[in-house]
Amino acid sequence: MTQNEAMRVDTAEQVTGPDHAPVAAVARHATPGRRAYLKVTSQNREMNGPGFTPTQLAARASYLLRGNDLGTMTSAAPKLYPHMWSWDAAFVAVGLAPLSVERAVVELDTLLSAQWRNGMIPHIVFANGVDGYFPGPSRWECRRLAANAPAGVDTSGITQPPVHAIAVQRILDHSRRHGRTTRAVAAEFLDRRWVDLMRWHRWLAHARDPKQHGRITLYHGWESGMDNSPRWDRAYANVVVGDLPPYRRADIDVVDPAQRPSDREYDRYLWLVEQMRRCGYDDFQLASTMSFAVEDVFVTAVFALACEVLAGIGEDYRMPNADVRELYEWADYFRAGVIATADPRSGAARDFDLRTGEWISTETLAMFAPLLCGGLPRATERGLLRLFEGPRFCGHPDLRYALPPSTSPVSKDFRPREYWRGPVWPVMSWLFSWVFARRGWAERSFMLRAEGLRQAGDGSFAEYYDPFTGDPLGSMQQSWTAAAVLDWLG
Image (cartoon, rainbow, N blue to C red; front, side, top):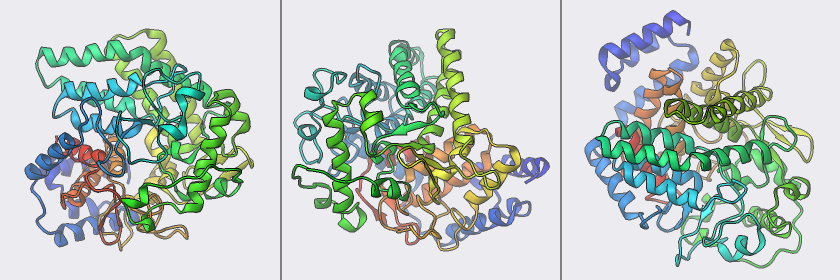
């Protein structure tokens, strides 16, 4: 769209209100890809059943989070994920904030209390006395093997995407709607944890950019949060499994094995954990010894975005100027690292395999990383948005909802019911919706929100959904799905 066309779209939405944005009016000024996207959303409005009302849906989501509350942490899901996961906890805090700023603060406090001495936030904080998940503390053995592991709490030895600044922003946003006491709780949390948030960002900027390419390096696909994405197929193919201690998976006791990674994939996952154990989870040794080392463009874009968000918070709350400057510098540096991977014509971003020296190009959500952090030339960015909304992703004619599948339905790697190889993840729809609103793309943000709420209308709060049938998949009663719904409705 031209600037004038975009203004007409925004004006149409403003006149009618966001809950009644006129699809026909928008479509008149849309590109072919955009029209495909709008056609899917229009069809969905006609074919959807009544589902739950927004009030009912909010009540069910609130009830779910209360049910998954373990006291000072929220389990990611009651059966499949009975502990605290790092980026889940951040999204959970986003959903808790409209219910209770105080409880949202406790969630992040618990996570940050498990921060490693080097600044890393681990991807799992294990709940005391809770079993039913593998690999558990006895497999990681971080307290025994890792010099940087925290005392008194069991954690994993890897990390996850740094979305936590977004959670802090949403907590502060909601605190402003309340009285002085609630605002003081949020401000005191920020004062108390600012140093920890800076240590987290500093660790990522230094320990996880060993080649100084301006991109975050992962040593395990689990660190991406997109465990079995096609992005990692080639990198995992080069992992030769050694003498692996025996194990028994717990996930396939809860979820259909067809929706989960294979045993062969799990062998590779656990061999990487074994390699980490053998080098004591030491940052320096990981960089030189791990079989898997990939510069993740999506995590890098999230990090650049998070640095910018945290810098803005620092300015608003008068944090040290040196910290704010450093955050903006990291945002610029890692944004440039993302843009350096982008195809000059389509704008699609790529990962980079440090072990083979090869670029990894896949039709997955990661290709849209530049939309999260910005930095593309305007014409290229418009092209990438057309790709996002066109028939290869959100505008595919067979989609049940016009939401981004984790892998393109036209990709040879697409599997509609298998984890990160095709299903739609509500939390990813929320993330893109939130970023689009932040970047001023109000109508695009609204469309994702509206479709996301229609998808959630079944009340299952599933981990992910079949993009064609809309069937809920993975674990039910997933905390971050409920959190996304609560923020959308808040």
